[in-house]
Image 1 (cartoon, rainbow, N blue to C red):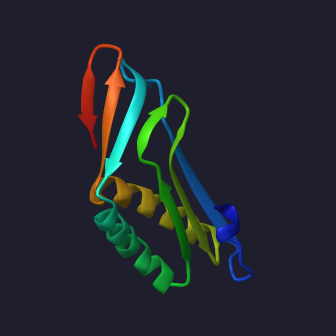
Image 2: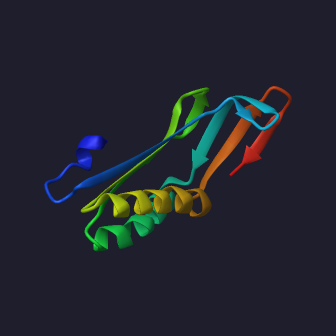
Length: 118
């Protein structure tokens, strides 16, 4: 995915990789199952990327679905921009907005029970 971000006009590339962690406070997770409404998720991701791309940036996002174990990669966000400050800012915007607006659901399997998260 990194190669999709490389171009002569970009001087900054910022990437975020989200993984399945074992502990959330006192809760121990054993695995996570992600599901999504793919057509709507793709449209939402395009809406998130559009203003960045309009300003000359490039956005690459991949979010896995299905069952993931500890340390598995769940999400990749990469942003290329002419300068590093824009790349950092835009990458954070993409991951934060994705978590709140894209219809992707997670089912956490913990040692004591199953929980639905966002």
